[in-house]
Image (cartoon, rainbow, N blue to C red):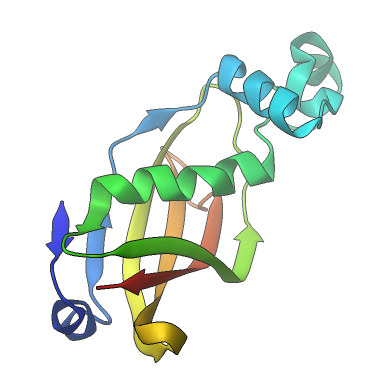
Length: 152
């Protein structure tokens, strides 16, 4: 895991590949829990038998926003900051859901530090390009530019 302890360290790492997370298996339980949390119970996600029979994917798939929500958790395996007073998600510049994630797939995140700029209130605005890869698939599940704000 990469640890940054100062603004200077972050700025010096712009353009670098920060690393890759461990593999995470997507279970039906995780998909169902996400459906309950968001109220999105579309059959393609939660009706296993119907998805096997009627879905073009031959299995239930994870919600795109479930995949996106995993980016923060998996990034904690890749990099962290020490000595920061505050670190928050600020948004995203671009998110593309490139390939559906089937229940049972294994995912891992690869993150590149794209930019670090000064932001209001003494914060740093940090942009990372995050690619959520599916094991044994040529195309990733998603590619997202994630924006964080960090105050040291």
